[in-house]
Length: 471
Ligand code: SAH
Ligand code: SF4
Ligand code: F3S
Image 1 (tube, helix red, strand yellow):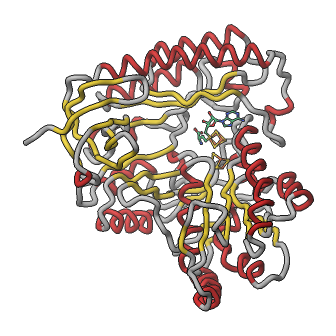
Image 2 (cartoon, protein in one colour; image 1 turned 180 degrees about the vertical axis):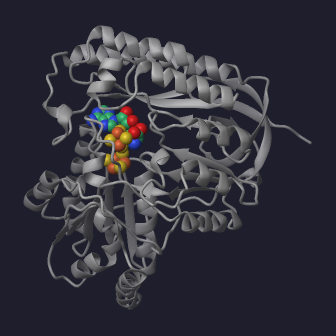
Image 3 (cartoon, helix red, strand yellow; image 1 turned 90 degrees about the vertical axis):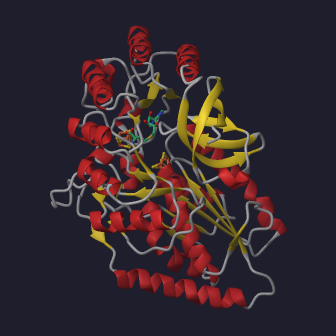
């Protein structure tokens, strides 16, 4: 792994060179009888979603239209996640099955990218056992996808590009966004925290921040295009700017973004409790456009386990941050992540996690069973608790949180809340409260993309139901 912290800024001419590869591929694609199709399949977190939007941007420039049917796709691009073993198995199963689609459609080009591709043993496995895969590249190589793809497209053989590096920043890559209302904006890449269970720093490289002016102009453009819900992304947004030396930290960036004219909401993910500051809470409290939603992963309620995880805060320190946040942002919705069964976690330590969720009463909680990741320190730690005991603890925690979420949702009933109607599914329209709780409602499709006053009429543990207030 590369611990060098030097960030490479990819020169604009390099991106121009990549786009020239797109143009060459486009010229060949346009000679075909029908427009070729690409299928981009994304796993993992919003960072990967944002990366897929850039890969789609490149593919669109190459002349591809998009499909979600792997059988008809000329190009299949699988953007993978390495966070837990389960995610990896699912991907490898799906990649394995593509041998059949390729047999039925011999010219098909299959690419695997993302965090798993950056793990040397996975790349090796694909090289040896998944001959149907033509191109493998990690997150560091995303900006040069056109050049790599061109080599495969012109049939120069299989290409593997997974060199380890501290990481780069590339501006000017075209983007095709999946949604016209909500947008992701990466403000930084990588992570320096090295939580002992986590693979992310190894596959995403060191923390590096984008230039604030570039970020702000991207947000301005999104608002002008009609986006209403913009999420600033980073593995630990509170570290934003530390590497730039410009005197702009995350709170400053957020406040400047919130000063952009227009009717929109700003969100951000993720915050590390050790760095979540009073200054940030105050900016949230003060800026109406910053949504009152805070995702603050706690991972464990035991100070001993937190230390073994290298989280660098204590149970009390975490609870103190929550108190300060609630004091600054009264109606804030707090969500979190937690890991059950970290190596060496005792039953008594698990009970501390349970008592922490009682104390905080999160609006929603993402609960994970610890999954050993090759190359991380925790994977080598003693892990005496049985799988069954961990699973039982996981069930208890999830069941208790379900009750808490249900109670929290029930408290909305009767209230009227200004929500963004963001889409529809089989059951009607969907909307989000400022705190990002899901609301289901009946109504006309013309409401999609608008902020609407909604009176809450019902709730369950997952969502609220409501009706638009007639004015
Ligand atoms: N950067 C974010 C988290 C990204 S990963 C943060 O620090 O909060 C999302 C979540 O996956 C983590 O918060 C953690 O709860 C979970 N996770 C990460 N590695 C894991 C592992 N090896 N096993 C189980 N869960 C894990
Ligand atoms: Fe992983 Fe910790 Fe970094 Fe989050 S802060 S990405 S959990 S190492
Ligand atoms: Fe997964 Fe990579 Fe995100 S490992 S969670 S896709 S940063």
